[in-house]
Length: 584
Figure 1 (cartoon, rainbow, N blue to C red):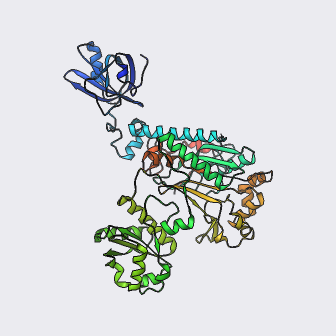
Figure 2: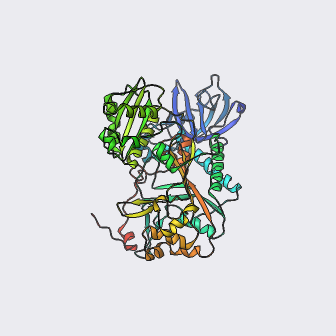
Figure 3: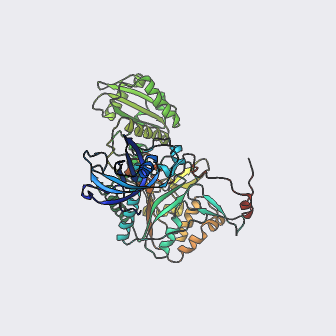
């Protein structure tokens, strides 16, 4: 029997049609001799009826032997059900079977997903991912991912971009994370690296005159996993010649509006809001702020210098957030927030309540009347609440209150989960000093042009802490979705950046000599951006972890539980590669 229809498409209009369906047994029921099988495939579920009055005993016996996840093919006639099942798209009909074939049996599965998603722990789901992917939730997530990729390809193609694949086996170059290395059998002792991004290749494509490039690109970084980070991930990689920041903003905004509409029928308002890096840090404590709710950070560092409260007077920075409706916070709850601040590196978390327009409890007894008035005025609370203070270095105060703000936003449900609030973060510092290594490093990456007004400062190597780069991040609901920049396209200037970062001539030649040489052959001005595909899909699907939108992700421990990888290899393979494993 050959399948004529899928399990999600039959409706009342198909009444009387002869059909053949194939799929997995989703549920088995025997009601007084009448056997019902809910048959499932990627498209949906159809109820199949086996009536012993109309079928030979052999067919009934086969149907009666079916259990969950058996693969079967069934033929029969569509008929309208007397009482429709409103929970199924096909609920108005059923198929009265006249034949059944068991294509393959199944042992008892390790978990069920009768409610549309797995009821197992993540570790078990990842071990049996091929079963987990049969669920409605995972099937829908993969379908959304497909639609997003298709929309991105269509949009960029219409804009004149062409998709070009770049190598997976590349040269190890410093890009901010550890490389995954691949040993070479032909060149013993030498290694390829899996690309952290196609950064250098896409710049070389601009040198090659390809003008508008994109790629749904696989990237690899050997760094600790998080819910929004995987050792291997995918980005929508974009690069364009003769382009400005404004061109990139306009292109990207249009693409996201198109993607959200095509993939999920969500209307996105453009243009997106813009915040400078400084204003984002000042007001939200992070460079990826969630703009769906307020709770802006307030700075009282200047007035705190004259405070009689030594904790404030001796701190480099004093900031606070004021939260309405938490005036009845218990001591236990307050202790949890204090522990949270300590976990982030702070000494603690000072607080005071606001009752009837006045400070009450906590550190209020250490503050003068004038200090209290300044705080109350800045808090701008319309009703009673609580104020949390961080007094430390500016970086640490921002880190503590920025994280606390995000936590409170979720706990207090201060935002609409169906709102999509995009913003650009611009005017990033180009350099930051690493005190542990006693050297300058770039905030994003080393291929970025400074803003024109800082060009001479770079050349003269002065005021490095004040130089702003042509850098930009795209943020959505507190998640960094994309990073990009206008790139360096002149060999000598790129070499100057390498020098500032402490690289020797020999290191520059070894790691980037091929790139600098390419720039000497007429490299055009160019720039680009790389939105993270996994994060886009997870937001549209409403998932907290990108593992939920990747077909075969790695676990939190960065291993594949399904294939038990990474794993040891045969000694003969290591010998071919001239590799010897030394145990610690």
